[in-house]
Image 1: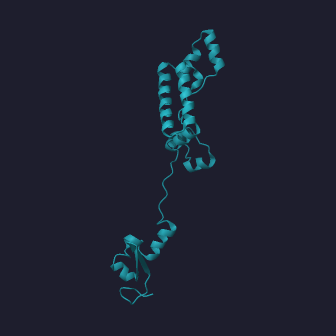
Image 2: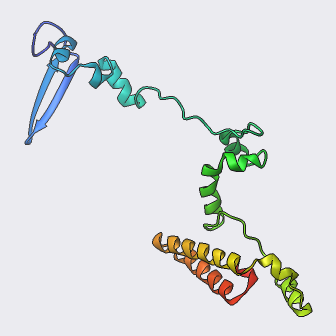
Image 3: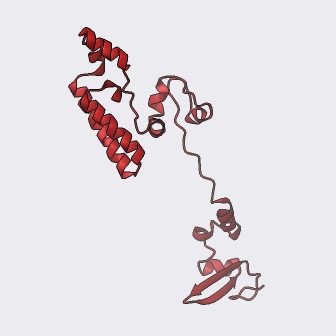
Length: 184
């Protein structure tokens, strides 16, 4: 098929435009297409084959984003994803942005370890009148910070409509306010 404009060269660019339900086709050679703005490098990546490559292959190759690396043990985040094992304590800090959501999903929204005290140990401690176990639980300020954190998680769970998780958080808050150490 020859070019609609010059009628001399083979048409290699085919434009189809639909306006108000009317279809119009234009068949142009590369020279006429470039002069009319259809074959410019900004639109096709240099050539018609560049346009096809861009559409089929997803565009020009982009450099891969740099993976974080632990400065202590040289562990990469990609290697952690393969092995599911961190190399050292420094990995937690190096991969913190990636690990925080992962830990949150694993531990029902909690990303910081609070710890637990066995009920029997607390009961024995209270019977003996010792405050040693109570000191492990933290003072009133620590408990109120924990309750505030749980209330924040409860709010997030309610906004995300995770009602089962919200019920568990509500129960934990109630237990902490009642003084039960196993609520943490």
